[in-house]
Length: 597
Image (cartoon, rainbow, N blue to C red; front, side, top):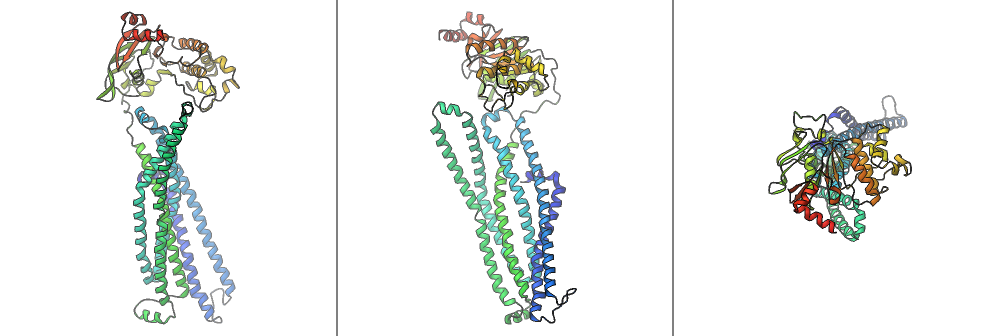
């Protein structure tokens, strides 16, 4: 929670003013009870004893006007209490929301600093749960618990002080009972804290499960896996329900425990107070022992204080539940913020101002750990303007090689150079502006076709956007759509065909005009007519650019300047299509197997 409070530090002045207001509110609130008790004892009791001798300064013996005056004072005090609370809540809510906004921004920035491998092992739903649900839990807990617990603590202190003023002996009896109540709350808190942490972890995993499964809901239906998903969902829901019940049940014990102590204290004070009331026979004996007597009005006030004392203690117990939730949520948020980030940028980076597109791999090796190397001793040169095809069976390392080139992962050995500069000497944003990617799995955000194309170059003119669409052979298709370029692409982008998605992605890449391209079988899963258009668009796209093509159908790369054949993490063959066929090695067998099919 200390790290949470750091986010509120910039708003210290607002919070301090709020603390002063809540102090005034609590003081006036407690003073109301004391004022009423003193009024009953000193004035009303005397009035009923002897109405003729009753007199109040400025009011004389007119009891009605005096009562109206007292009620007006009470009303004013209540008004002050209410206004103090209103302004305190306004300042507190404003400060907490701004603090949580800063926390969300830190989480958002952290996402962009994390290595790709973090997202390989953590579900997106779990990450989003920390950024939204967990921070919202912290915000709500702070808003409610901060004001209520602070007011409760102040109320306890002031009530105890006024009790000592009213009657020292009775005040000591009450004071001795308070530690037992707080000890009970502490024990319940420590017992349930572990359950709350498990509960929030389970909730995050549940969000991850939902996001993962229902993103691929079409595949679930396709393979008739609805019942499997329902069973797994049911299992996770029951486990989460069990944790929610246990955490809420344990934390809910605070209220009955505190009520028990409050009633016990009330009984003890009532029994002792009965003998201390002014005029009782035993009160004369107790006076001789040094125990002061108490008037009936003040004793009534004291009993009200005892009863009121239980309320703030119960409120503290209730707020401890929210604090436990906030503590568990903050652990998850700050565990995320503590994750190891990408390797820091070089202090004095080199800059490729005018990229040419040369790429050199020298003895590159990579693995997530030293025992399991995914790529070993990779060597090749891609000259500016060349098309380099990468082929090989599934799991041979094709995608890994591209990830290393984009520096999504750092290599274990060797070097990768772009235009003679080691990519580790470049800033990542400078490196990645050199590249453009057209993948088999296209990506769109919920917006117009126009904005999705313009995403490749935010400052592009209207003419540049349209020209890019024409070069990508997609202008005609766009103009046949409702609203043309202003047609909204939905969240799943399923109001576009696979071919249209590929063409729009190519238009986006053409607009960004990168010097090096990465193409991952962009012409697969489309009909023959669209495939021809895609081939034409790709040919325009790769003109005067270095292109890396991940190929699954070897017929699409026969004109590549160089073909790299990967197998089990190593380049076992490289050359042109004809050279590799003449060599009659692994590539020859792959080509023959596809041709025969």
